[in-house]
Image 1 (cartoon, helix red, strand yellow):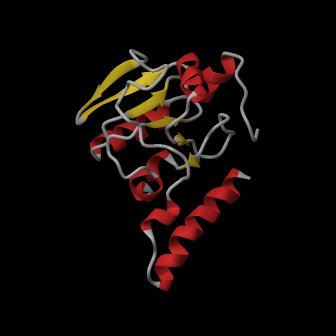
Image 2: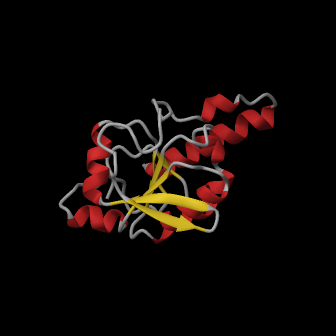
Image 3: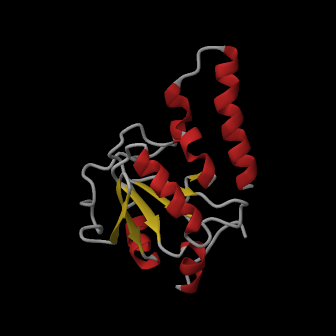
Length: 160
């Protein structure tokens, strides 16, 4: 089902541009994803561990911390794992970790907006987080241990 959704989204991006006159806003996920201030919305003060990369940093959170963040969700939750092996409830997008830079039109245009990534084990989302930071995003978050750590905490997955 998620593959069909991703294919539909990709076709939706390509078809209007092939016909001339694509609207950049048409492919933006719905919802209030513009975070008013980095790392300060309800339930996320002093949450996670800052991870430094060559071009900046991102925040790595535990499954319990992400679960609290999802209670007052104001960010896109992005599954970066390929191939598809399920989703954390509340997932907005599936973007392969190695295609993040090719799918920026699906993400908030505000480079300071919070974006949370995850994958199956954490390896792919770590690479995706580094890519986003390298592109200038300043409020990138990543789930430590991915869906495996999420399941180990007794939390559900969808589509498996």
